Image (cartoon, rainbow, N blue to C red; front, side):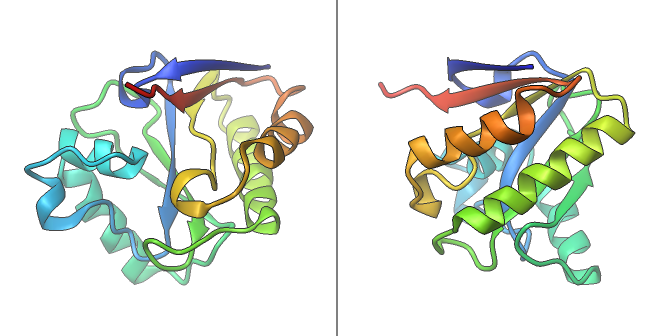
Length: 160
């Protein structure tokens, strides 16, 4: 199932949080510990800096590339199934592409099916920093997530 809402994704009620990641595990760095920056990864890092440490360690030890996924704990956040990081770009701040988002969504759908994940909060992967159009992303979300057993809640950033 697939539904959409606006708001702060780190306060969404779901079993799993999905984060748009880079292949380095960087989520905001030093400055992100003290100031909440605008992205999903940066919001996670601001809430709990230990998650970036986990992500960096995993990325350093694995040979991950765009389209791959990896799991960390949720640290202090309430997501009992952890945080699933979908690598949408190779390096921080780079643009993404539709093929990478498609590979991420296939991997996310497979992970959720294999692990019986009842609900997952997911951002618009590739939107924002990734510079893809929301229309393109929504078409892919419909294709890969709408008929899934997991309830995917797509959380779009609330513009203040």
